[in-house]
Length: 115
Length: 110
Image (cartoon, rainbow over all chains, first blue to last red; front, side, top):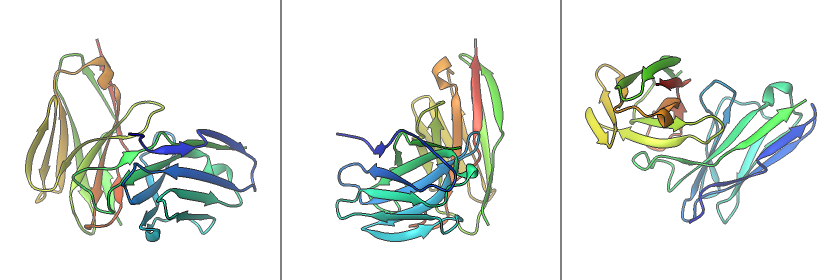
């Protein structure tokens, strides 16, 4: 079975540009969560989606948006990129929003560099 | 707000035992999880404690004391491949997202 797939793996963008990151969860998993991880820090929660509905949003500006599609894949969009948006963006897949016992399965992430 | 405290760095000798502590202050509590992340890799789920006590999975064990808002990850028979960052994470409600600590960087030396 394929794990969590994220694309692209690396991306370089210029300040002010827009970026779209993509995630395909594990087959059968209906929940996708997005996290931002700055070097040397823990993952910071951005969004959680379940059954195509937003179930949670972290403390990020409105420049960040996301959506989940009928096949449970997801996109994270970031507008008006700032240098501080440079980070590893992780997508986590889980059967439901809870799934504490099973844990999240993370993708390998998208390394975004804003110059 | 939520806060999770864990040591930033730990160094231990190959074959030894190391304990990584995590204390938390959250508005609610619905379990403590541990994740491992190697440099350049994705976080990988290690263990979950929903109730007080010890959970054992091979060389790794995790402990939780809800009354003390405290937990730890115990790694035994350390191997060089255990060198990685370890994150504790809590969920404040049944369907809320995981909140991660800043991580502990473990270096295993010969």
